[in-house]
Amino acid sequence: MTDEDHISTRTVSSLPNELLVAIAAAGQGCGSDFLEWTLSHVSRRFRDVVVGAPTLWTLIEADFYDWGSVEILKLYLERSRRCKISLTLRNPSSEDFRLLTLTRLGQIIPHIERCWKLVILLSADSIVEVLAPFRDVEAPHLQHLDLEVITDYPNDECIEIFSAGAPRLSFLKMDGLKLQLPPSPSWMASLTHLEVLEHWVSDYSNLLAAMTAQCPLLVHLHLDILWEFEETSRFHIPSLKFLQISVPDSEDEFFLEAIVDLFDTPALEEFIIYGTHGDQIFTLFNLTSLPHSSFPALTSFSFINKASCSCEKDIPFSSSISAPPLALFPALSSLTLVNQCLTHNLVKDLLGPSSQPWPRLETVTLCPKKDHFDAVWDAVKDAVHSKSQRREPFPRLRFFRTLASLEAWQGNEPDVEMFL
Image 1 (cartoon, rainbow, N blue to C red):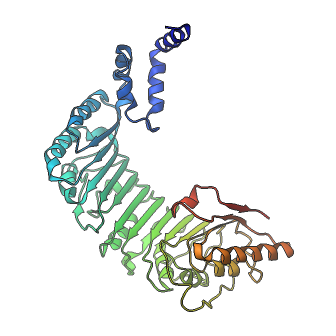
Image 2: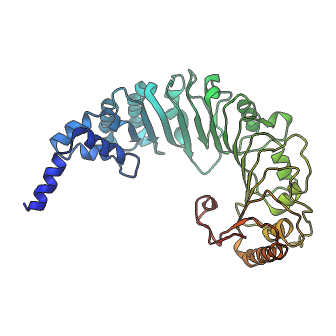
Image 3: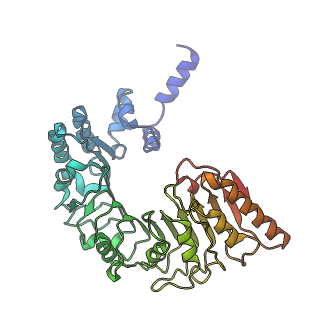
């Protein structure tokens, strides 16, 4: 052994126990899978230190298709002792794993009272069987519940979970399955974040509207559902700050107006809508008021077209926006158009040479459709030149040529960023 090896070995072995635990804890949740398990097999001392630190065994994952990991799950549950735990469960689509699934659930349920986060990834043919053991139990410390079904077709299976109560639940995500509504009142009292995705069962929006009206702390709402246009389908959420919805991409020019009017959310600050078309935005922005809703606090509005469309191939578009939508959105300072048809028309009317002043608008983010990139860029250049000539303010411009995904505009740096 060289002197350098001796120094390195002596340095590692001389680390105090507290520092070893801190190093292991720092690696949790950072891409180092099962770091605590690996460290517990490095040496006898490492094993004693790591096994003796229950907080290192609180991030628990279970795959319902691996017989060899049943004992590992048991060890994690034992070594975490009375600490709060985070559980991620993955269930395959196969009858061959039914016994293993039931075995794992039998291990987990007695510990659910100390679970603060629960993520379950389900196959469509095992929803009821996997979730049934959770139906009548109480989860007194549960804060985060994420239930996702891996399926390519709508599922209308109605499930009930934690009917005995989850009084601290603040985050709820339901992707591809239907929750029995209304849930326990204790759920709604503390809920701040709700996502209901890939849910296309009729009348469910009525139930969700009734549920969210009883969530006094709800600030984040994400819905991908089948929309109903009735008075009982309107969402009254005074506390809401963030709203993201998806709408069908084959509706007429008045559909967006009707959807926006479903939300009575006076404190809303950010609104993202997927599935919109340019003619719908023109119709909305030309309104001076909505029958039921107002958005006095809205500062950011984003419109994303999810697919290709023929809006710019058929009849030439002749509508125009006479003035910025200040009556509807008086505080709006950020506008985003991603993959949106008629973007060049919108840029021309809202920012171009003949546009009216929009003093509060600070940021415009654009990612045009590939076939219309040049038209949008020409409209932007005309707008910039006009505002510059007249010495009028122009918003910060974030321009993307392409995006890896429709969501990438939120975190990535633009290809062009322009200030005047």
